[in-house]
Length: 219
Image 1 (cartoon, rainbow, N blue to C red):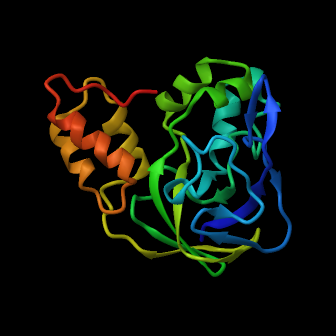
Image 2: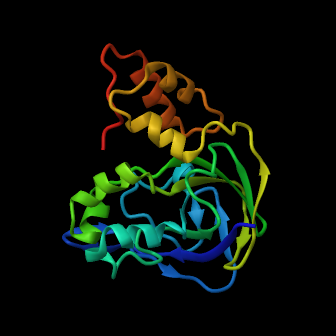
Image 3: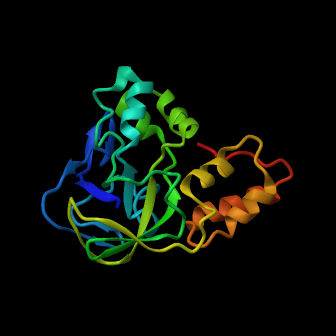
């Protein structure tokens, strides 16, 4: 049974000349989830972060050891919280989480809707511009969740799958379809119709599928 290992929230602060809420600290006791995120969690740049389709960011605990082995120079920061996640989950990874799933954690019901698309904040956190491309290459992106039903969750809660509408579109499959070079238009068209896919990602996939020369999703 997958298990919620940690809940993390953070406040906006200045880092390398930019204001960000990337750094997050573990929470003890129940934390409430609602449509816009977790109670006590701030979003610095609302243009690209936060909102109903990026309400909660989850990451698979099993990924950290792989990252550390591949990037030993960053091992000190490749520990829980290193990717700014809200939820650290044991037993789930990108290849066994699907778009549109419904996962019950505590009394909250959450729905994966898109992979994390790495950006410059990730590069600044590790002081390494290559970490963005590394996340795309290895597929260890984590995933964003909608909050379908408000509720409270706490570290140690089980993560229970209640509904899976489309087993074909794992987070890993979405990443492969989106970053393959060149993309396959037929695959992108199917992706654009995946139940539960975030609206922005679906719009991009539909446009790319019809392009004369489709390109991978831009970083």
